[in-house]
Image (cartoon, rainbow, N blue to C red; front, side, top):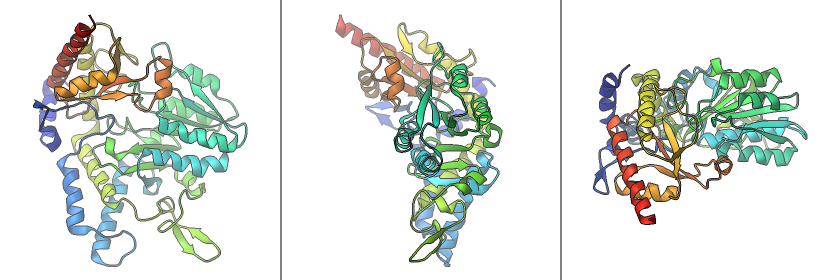
Length: 420
């Protein structure tokens, strides 16, 4: 596919995102921060409004019409998510507030029950804090040991080092699919296959992959997978955990309360069936329904079409960034056609703080991220306190990349002139 063909798609979808059609600091907004949170199309916004105006009621608990409609919409969204990632059973999708809660659910429910002193957990140095801190807490409680996969010289996942860490002591592997800082796409099918050879369970953090590329949990064969709705055109406050049905059935509840029970007595209780056993209390009903609308929206566009277009954006972004000398870009470069990494780039310029770059770019209407991106251990490896990050989605254009790179050049020149 050529960019000319895909530009029609970009032009078509941009009208669906009202937030993109505004000025920031008297300049047209260029939103390059979708790795932190994507923008929301009208289809999602209208779904939220329709629910609250027409159908709001608590789910699963009422015999009246509004409750029935809300329940149908809530559970229909679960079906959509299951189909989107090719889960074998709808019960394998558990709603959570976000991916962080999903990882904590696995850590506290499965980890505390199954990990013992001397057992080993394998993570990587590129993990988001949400895929490090819960396991550190569980390791402290159980006596398990955490080991970290290092980077290759090209700053990618070191598969050979991973192989060397695996042993009969390995009980859990928890790895990010796409790094939110390096942009690398990790070989999750190989990671899972190798982990299973040693009897380990494998969790995949798919926050940066599910919104951008086809993800098939049965093909990957992971035991769990997590994602956040707000990164895939849905709202904040909703995410999901995928888990193999038999594994979820073996795990104790994470939270207690209403909804997750079958029967309650003064002396004991019995748990409900999947997935409700992990969904205690009144859920984020509107947000879950909106997640279904977001899945519909991405499906109607075509996730493969989105991925192909983002590869073209990535190729063009790196081509333009190559015009800026002494730009320290983290992670391996993509192929000439943009394959091999996500459509994001984290970078630094010697002598200029990343937050200063982001602030001046914001003055020109360009929104990028600055900081450690919740990957402090990774930044310490690079002897950097943080970095600037531009992350693109299918609603971004080549013209926006041109403006971003030109403005970045001018910003760097401004800072250098101040230092002379």
